[in-house]
Length: 341
Image (cartoon, rainbow, N blue to C red; front, side, top):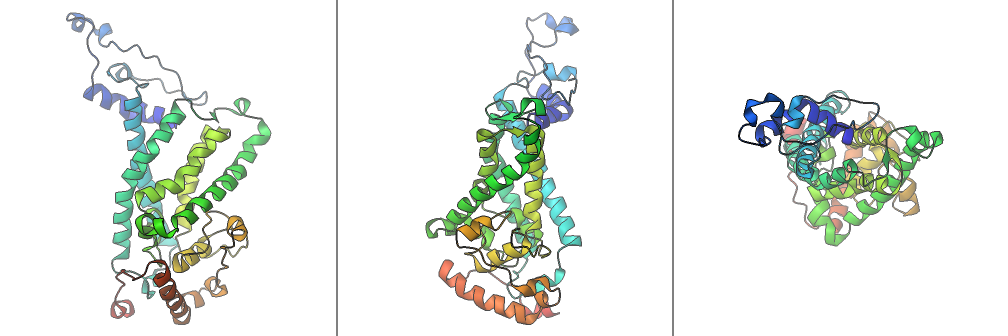
């Protein structure tokens, strides 16, 4: 994130902090000397040898220079919140427009005003998740992780490729444990239930969490570079990939009929039946933990997956399970008359 922070500071942050928190003059007479317009002793060092953005004069004109931890924290929070919301809203919207089957809104367990509710939940969660994530970004930019710049700084060229499957396997295992833990009866109703409000989710449900739930499931992504080397550019790329994947497994397009990949079909089974398919990327940990449930074959038939027979079966089983997991079902579903019009 130090590269992202440098870009944000160069194009926005330096100007904002120079205006909001200007540096003090050295003496009452320094205003006569334009070369002495600031007392900042900060010196520019590129965040990466691959990217050098020469700072403007405004980088030296704030009482909070770029190394100030409070400034870094505020900027990283804002970048995470704004970029996270843009990524969520733009790509969830694209997924909804071009991938999501709108007929799913006629499902008997589709909620009244569901999309607006999903967006509201995500909009409330994202700033809190961003705030909870900011301390991890601060550790990264201040050198307290094993992130590295170039292949020469890492374990070797062999690791430049190996780090990706290693990251996926590690985070998949950890998220499985966190996610399964969130289904414990003492925790579920307080943290994870808001995300399970969506029985038939749309792409907008991807980030519609309780903020502590979303943050808890993101912890493995930040723990990995504390324990293992990770290229800093790979880190940013994987952060974007994780968000894309989260949207994809909520898009209702069941293309991955695979015994290995935990795709949208597997995740739909999780939303319908609660106690299965906790994994994020693969079915490995669900198989080892005896929580894997193979998606129904009808889900991969475009006509049958949107058929009344399939929906009735899903609704009937879901109603039994929701009583076991939650007790009374307090969701408000779309009226049948409106769905059929």
